[in-house]
Image 1 (cartoon, one colour):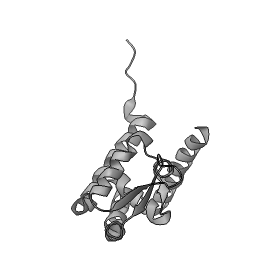
Image 2 (cartoon, rainbow, N blue to C red; image 1 turned 180 degrees about the vertical axis):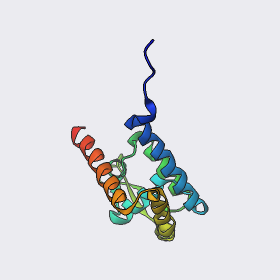
Image 3 (cartoon, rainbow, N blue to C red; image 1 turned 45 degrees about the vertical axis):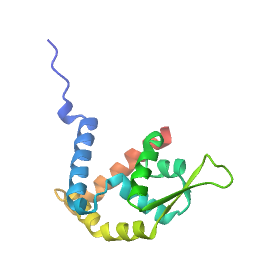
Image 4 (spheres, one colour; image 1 turned 135 degrees about the vertical axis):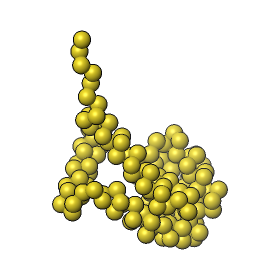
Length: 146
């Protein structure tokens, strides 16, 4: 009888577990702000590029474009994002961070920085740099292939 697949050491399984850890730590550190990692990324991306369209922004934060509108809707409901149709193409939606959204994002920076330190905490400084470089290379390698 063949032995089962060693999923405990499979890259996909370990990446999924690391993602679970990262989200849990992020939520613990930012719990009082009621925000997800993707929502935080959206706010920060819009602070860098105000007036970005939804499709481009979804790609920028690596989120599924089909469900992106509902995430934006939740940020709108909080008063953190403003969405308007593009004057040149009414089907295209443009996005801006509101002043309240910018204040919220800035207020969360310390908590998010703590989360990042906690996520990398089990690694020494060299390992932390190595992991970030390798994860960046892995993600970039798959973006180029897509």
